Length: 105
Image (cartoon, rainbow, N blue to C red; front, side):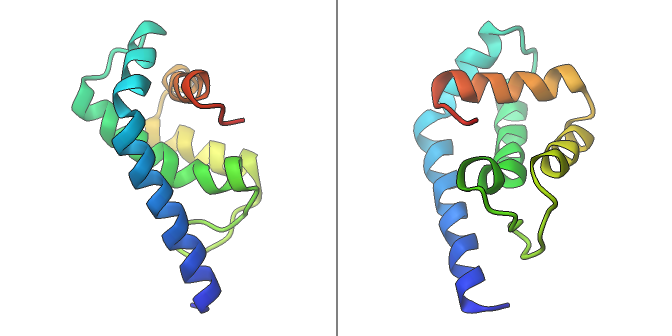
């Protein structure tokens, strides 16, 4: 993997780590306010995966996935997120909770 790609991946991972640390409580409170039912540990696990799948594409406009492969745009990463969470309503709640606290889209 090229050094440039490694740097981009590490940068995105550092953003995820920062956001998870600094905004996790706010995101969870908003998620619950919107009707989410996951426990805090489950929410945190899923939120991390949400960011891993979508952050680079949604906020940076990059098609690079964190595993070094490339995606085909927002629809592709959203479909991967929905497949992971396995519930369209729940998938939307995560996006809405994040977007309401820190504009994501």
